[in-house]
Image (tube, rainbow, N blue to C red; front, side, top):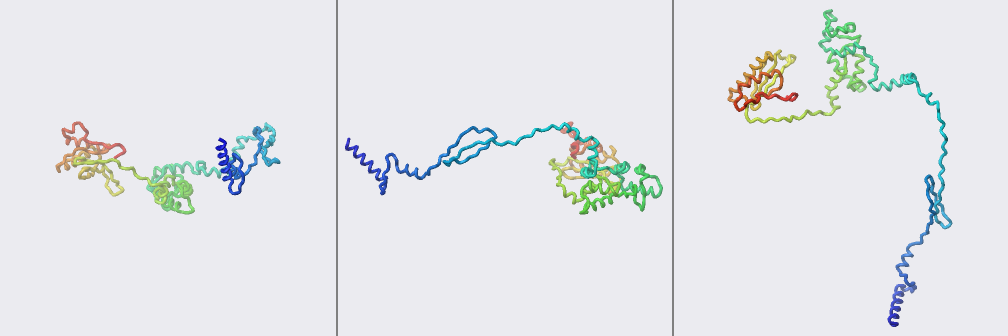
Length: 358
């Protein structure tokens, strides 16, 4: 055993000399080289000692160095500003303005200029007669009749009776209290000239305010209608697409007759009639138009029977009639009734369109 313990001791000494390296420094027991190297790499850090104390609210924290280069926490009370006691002012109620003082303060030129930005508070300079004239809105024909009546002394038009004392005529023009009344085209020219003037007004209400000073019969509705017909003004608004047509109708054979009435205008060169009846087969587009003397039941029935007999002469039987709910389409039931078949039973032979959807 002594021999073995001596061998182990020699092995340990040899291992320590090997770790010490060529310089031959001795290494203490239980302190390996890697432990010593680690302690050399890490510099010694000064330990900081702090005095822990309770930290009440409203306190400031400050650090200062001790002779040992350590920081000690000190606490100082914060200096709060002294609050002066408020003195109650018992005379505050005397500073409130009286109602009349408030009215006098608001009723001045500066306030009126500010209020003028809102047009609801504009002082109206029009008389009741002028407002009545704008409400009447006489057209070109009515103005010409009033001019002729004033120049020739004939019977005065009914619309001009309330304004007899205000109307005068000069060189074929009508004047209201010395202000000229414009015709339809003259209104349009005056509105467009002011709208396209770079220095003039551009909106509906500003143009209306400026033209009413010179012309008594120019209303806001006239200006709105004229501006909406100007292409440049229309470009200021988004495009409104018409509603989509969702209705569909597919036919495999003739026999469905569509009919309606229209009334051409005398101003477009048509003679005065009771209306025109249009009838068409929806499958073949076979169509006739009848000019009627009146909208009486017998007259319209005769035209319908003529078309149905002509259509049947080509070898096709009328099956149904499509029309709206107008009173002038009532004879259609009697006209189509003789073409009813057994398989039709009691089903209606005339189909009416929905109200508001022709």
